[in-house]
Amino acid sequence: MSKIPLFDLKSFQPDHHQHSAVYVNSLKIHLASHKFINVPHSHETYITVLFTQGHGIHQIDFKSYPVSPGDVFLLSPGQVHSWSLSPDTDGFIFFHTEAYYNSFFQDQKIDHFPFFFLSHNYPLVQLGEELRETENWFTQLYKEYRQEYPRKDFRMISLINLVYIGLSRKYRHEVVREENENQVRIRKLYQLIDGHYKDKKLPNDYAEMLSMTTRHLSRICHEVTGRTTSDLIHDRILLEAKRLLIHGPDSISLIAYELGYDDVSYFIRFFRKKTGISPKQFRLNRQNTTPE
Image (cartoon, rainbow, N blue to C red):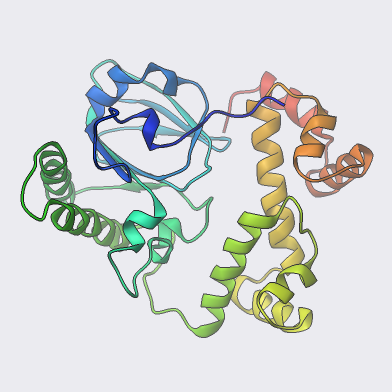
């Protein structure tokens, strides 16, 4: 079965580079050096991109975002994206693994930041007066990455953390706040769904993994999100189904199998019930219309 290209850090780093868990570059050099990223693809890492010059379109999971100086895009592992950018585009980009960030902090984790709370959160922060300070952090990070200084890793993670803290204060859809116990549980639920949606599709599967009853999980899920546990599971399945339908050439039956459905007709009924159209019609509509 054909797959959407999935890149790890080795795809972007020289073989001799010691920082196998992080990658930093100027955006101009990155774009010139890796032509293969111009087609829809995904990454195993978290990605942050700052645009300081140029314009174009950045497409992320079925939506197209105009690009302009001061835009910062933040992508979680697995998000499908591609872009069409003007020749003068510049800025900075960095990738890192989940383990790289989390290993430096005892309490703070990468998915505590509001833009990484879900794997499909709103991916854009538009900077105003904060641009100069943010660009300075990116510049320092890029210089640090390219040189061998004492305690280099600690300064790099400190700069990355400054970027994330600054962006979280500016983030459009979330208010940074202390999580209560139920919010922590629902964040864990999202993580479990991300890892198991292909083979576990029932609320009781996740209630068991969270060591609670299905009814208790349903109650806190509705309290925190306003939706049912099944809604969250179905949302994740539909997101991946749409990715495969749009970016992959495979048949509906192969996509159904990839998503854990042995009965393709059941998958088609499920998709139609949730979207109002069949998978085939969804694919045709996306091929014949301009992305959102």
